[in-house]
Length: 279
Length: 245
Image (cartoon, rainbow over all chains, first blue to last red; front, top):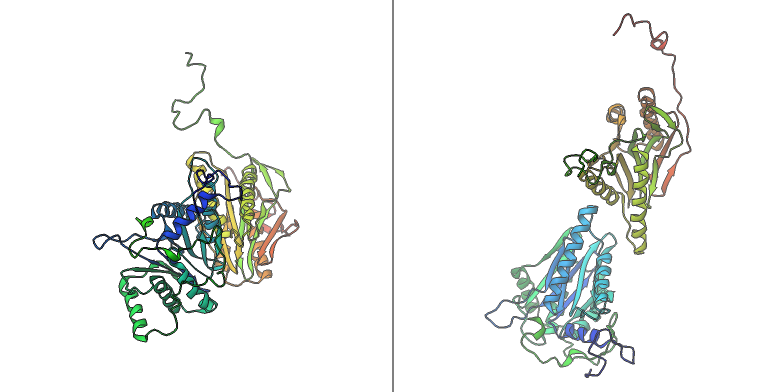
């Protein structure tokens, strides 16, 4: 993607029918550190990689509880993510107050998408630079959605966003058919393994990843460090079989759905340290 | 400024421009609604009377209406306010349907929405002068609740409004049990309605019974209850009335 004369305003179309500002916003998502989500019939697990700026600082919060039955993981401009989480929390709590019932996830996601769309059609606004993986439970079961800065949303069995998410997607693609009937614990294990894929060789420890679960009879919550470390330890003991699809792929098989816009993927995302957008 | 000519009340905190903006008393009213949970869902009964003060003026008022796919609403009190509530709910269900996703508002959600509406109106000193009964079921879960004009709401296995609370609830407390059959439920409701017919001056002998089950709402055609007036105590009612009081 190169600079051109149609990319200054979000309200300017290119001759090829593209809105470059929206696509640049989606680039911001690709630059953020990875977040993944996967679901079974009864549970949804979210995971993300936390990179702190330096050893002295704490890491960015990327997973937010929205309500007892909904949580969200973000990648991209975390400030935008925080604002959207606050909006989602507000919507959920207002619905609960009026109807004494949890807001169906599908409706929240549509409201969020419509909010994002507004920013793609006003000259005085900019698109939100954050991608959201919304995990939630409602009457119709467990759901995982991905909300784009473009205002699109898709439902997924499993998905990954952010830098080096392709590695995680490859892993998830191989395994997703089993997820529907997975137990909760297997789902968490798969989530941690998918995160490990994005680290590409770096040691996996609980201090650099965060896992959250929501399920039937289990309100949304973030797993504590100790629990996560225990699960990680069971992998290391079992020793690596299967896994690494370390080669950042010839991108066989697009996954469940592709984001529109260019394929300029993160394959070459340089950083070993924090992705700049996460500050 | 000629203060003598103005009819504004002194304390304008209590009223907006003038008192004609707030409900002070009801005009055309419906009397009790009685409802109970039974094996397959909810049964609700209400007569078809609309009283204008002490005149039994309208005799074909339908005081129970289906709401969406899962609920049934019965109302006593001001009939025009009931019609207003039906318009609110119509809009609510319309927007719910417009989402066109698999979700729909169940009886619990509608009940709570109504509670919010009634309570908010009460806070503005401009109530909707009704006592509402909201029953229904969704995914096999039965629900029966009530809301008053001041926003008091609760759920129970059997509810009633107005005189029904005093005359029908005691009967239901004795005779209601879990998993009533349809026939037993109707019989029980008719027993309650008959007592109301004898003792509530605003009752008329033309009623409907509505049921809601997983298959939907059915409201019966209007019919009358058989009554018996040959009790010996009714003969020569003035017999014991010697002197005054």
